Structures are given as structure tokens and as C-alpha cells.
Image (cartoon, rainbow, N blue to C red):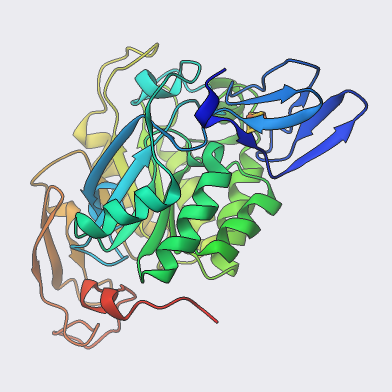
Length: 347
Ligand code: SF4
């Protein structure tokens, strides 16, 4: 066990000499000395502790477009930290080098170190990402509170499997935006992600939105898992019905990794997904991992006018006028980077 990274877990319930973790919906019950499914939390003398508090495996200042968050302060930068481990078992994990091993020794950063670095690197916000951020719940809460005091925004890139209590705490601490990965239908999610209940992820998307958190959805389109037109249609329909038609939906191309080695997603499958998303009434559907494609750009859902032009992770042109389409005047729900300096905590 790695000393500086051990910290009391916030959400736990004692049951004799066992302890239940209430951080994510796996709700592991840990006997004496045991670690949970994610291997980042352990029962030490009847108390649940996290083993990765402030244990940073990866650190970089990223364009917010990389999360991807396209409707949240476009053109801004977020200082992004990852740690170790995951609570899902997806065999295609694109970050398997940090997510699939027990915690290793990373760079130790206190929440103060992280926020100070964000300011020094001229970032407008924070992001906890790369591995599953929910596993860093306690550290995230401290980072978010400090970041809010410095007028920085806070984001998570997540599989959305935290408990309701964890999500409430994150929202109260200053979580501003999430990108949630919707991986497929209930059967595929249960099978490939190892016992995960997709309904809980949908519940959290809706709950986050109700708590005022900006929500964008990503689906990594994977041949043999979710590339079927009707599966994508069902996801799009549910996004519209449950989170709203203005929710950005990112369809991202998969590349073989870890234990899943079918060929990469053909561009045609992503374009089919885009069409299905629009047919189902989603106003903003984007392709990802296809640099230079016109469907990385934002168009007016009413008149088709090009509104925001992107090249990869860079915003090259923003034609919106007062948050509206310059051609037809439709209001476009995007928060802009020139508002970042005015970003203040909610009451
Ligand atoms: S955070 Fe880890 S230990 Fe806790 S319930 Fe989830 S998988 Fe289990």
C-alpha cells in the first residue's frame, strides 16, 4: 500500500468487520484486507480507504474539445489529471495502460498543487479524466471547491456509474460539465463492461442535467458491439427523450486496443450514426477521431448555416452572433470562452 495516497473514503457503510463502498454502483462489500472491484479502495482495519488520493498518473493542459465538450467554453483549456484503475471491464479500453492495472506510484499532487498548476498553465478550468474519475471522488471534491474559489470551471469525463450520493456531492462541490460515455444497449454493456447496469448510467445523465450540470454524451462506435443502426437509433432516441434534443452526441471512431482487436470503425458507420441521430431529433451530432471531417463542425439545426468550424481539437472560426445563428437568428445553447472570466459559482 502506497502511504501518501491513502485517504479515508467518504461514502462507506460498516457491516460487522466488512465495509460496503458507496462510491459507485458496484457497491462492493469488502472483507478485512480486501480491495474492491476497481482495486483502488480497500478495507483497512474495518475502514474503507482510497489508495489513489492525489496519485496522478497523467497530467496535461488540454483543449476542452478533447474531452470532448463542444458546447462548453469552446476554445478554453482544462488542466486534466488521471489516476489509476476503472470500475468497468471494457475489453476495448483506449486507456488500458492506466485503467487496467492496480494503482502504481504516480506523481503526488495535493488539490492545492493541482489548482495552482491550472492557474500557472493559464487554464480556464479543470478536468478529471483518462481513467474513471469517480474513483478519485474525495480528491475531486477538494479540487472542485478550490477551483471554484479561483473562478475555474470543473469537468468530468466519466462512464457515469457513480452512486446518486456521489453525484450529489460532486454537483454541490462545483462540477460544471460532464461527458458521459454511453457504450451500447443494456445487454452489450452488461456483457462487455462486466456486470454493469446501463440503466444506472442513464439515471445519472438525467440526474446531472437536473442538477444544472452541462451534459454531453459520447458513444465509441465499435464494430460488433454497438455499430448497428437500430442500437444507435435507440441511444439517440433516449438522449433526446431523457436529456433533451440540444444534448451534443459525439460518435467516436474506435481503434483496436487492449483485448479487442476487430478492425477500426469504418467512417461509413460513424456517418450512419450521425444521420440516425439527426433523424431522431438530436440537434447537435458530431463525429470524433476523424480530423478534418465537416461533421466535427457545428451547424444551425434550423437552417444548416455553419456556426463553429473546428480542425481536430482547435476552434478555427466562430460565426455565432450573440449566441445566435447569424443567418436565421436561432438561439444556440453554447457557453462561450469569453464568459469564462465571468464564471462564478452558483449561489
Ligand atoms: S469504487 Fe471501486 S470499490 Fe467502490 S463500489 Fe466502485 S468498484 Fe467497488
